Length: 221
Image (tube, rainbow, N blue to C red):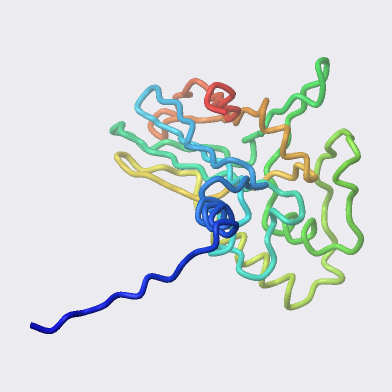
């Protein structure tokens, strides 16, 4: 019978701790990214609205492969509207607000950005100081001058990823992104709510109760 001999390589004792550290470091290495947030939702009168803030740069890559709104301090919130009632529901998308506490005595409502306003915030020259605390201004009308191919491309991406319609058919659903300019102050999400005030059933124009969805998830952090 043939005999097989195995040559075990001797590992110097000093390298063992280094090997262990190398094997364990991917598991225990800290991350600088914001924690992923699960969807928050509210449901009443046959309508369910869920909202998920996109708090990691990787979440934007598919919809915005070249210029990310997140890198410009803009937050995307993925919203889903599900209508389980027998009547269509109309939502005034332009009235949706992100409410945040600037400080202990100041609360502010941020309107969502249009695709044009998003392109302006991402591509305009200069930049904001992300460490400077300030009140968040309302968006201003954007002139058409100065637009180029990059502008048009980003505007189209924002439109395609956004909420396509404010009319939710009976037993139907609509999904898309809303954009809010947080000026890089993403820590304001710790107090954020998504406020949806104007909703109505299409038949008879009967109003629904407003939605106030807590995005802070302070209990899960």
